[in-house]
Amino acid sequence: MNETSTRVLIVDDHRMFADSLIRLLVDEDDLHVVGYASTIAEALRVAKVAHPDVVLLDFRLPDGDAPECVAHLRALVPDTRVLIMTGLNDDMTMRAASDVGCPVVTKDRAAAELIAALRLVAQGASDLAQDTRAALPRSARDRRGSVLTNRERDLLVELARGHSTAEIAKELHISPTTVRNHIQRMLAKLGAHSRLEAVAIAIEQGIITR
Image 1 (tube, rainbow, N blue to C red):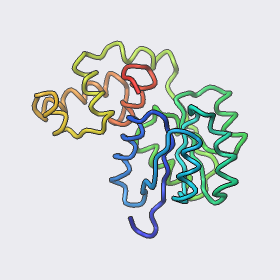
Image 2: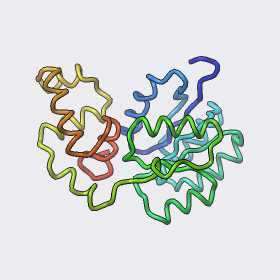
Image 3: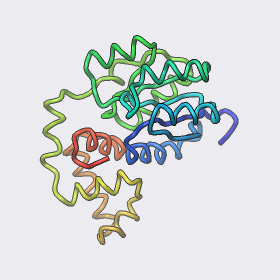
């Protein structure tokens, strides 16, 4: 980590999704994950020690929701900014986030959009472009998992565990080329632009478990 890196705390109770986020951000020189938490209580403990620049915060957590967590974070680490993540795109969720002055990114966005949103928030943005927030209509999302093969579902599980192409090939006893071909077809079926987005969609739809 260099001195100008943005320090990121990830707060999400979907551990596989969080692990995928961590692996994604490892490749970004200007973004550095300084901690992970799955509850508001854990987030506050980690934030007090790690002093993150940005908290990437899931909207719903086992012990409360994002607005509640934001209030505690601002009292504890007032210079820390918050980017709320959600699998929902309803007016109530967006209004709740807006009421506490936090930008929102939905979990079915491409990885590049999430990274861009983190950078914008680190720079002080209090709102994001509509196309960053927008999610696909529910009816379209709900159809995507039904067309996956069993092999493609197996691949999703391995991707959610943060495994590389080589690791998946070894685990499933197939060639790396076959893995890549399966992944491309699976991404197309899910309407996902990246492996991370595919995992987020799969968790949201219940295609794979948390």
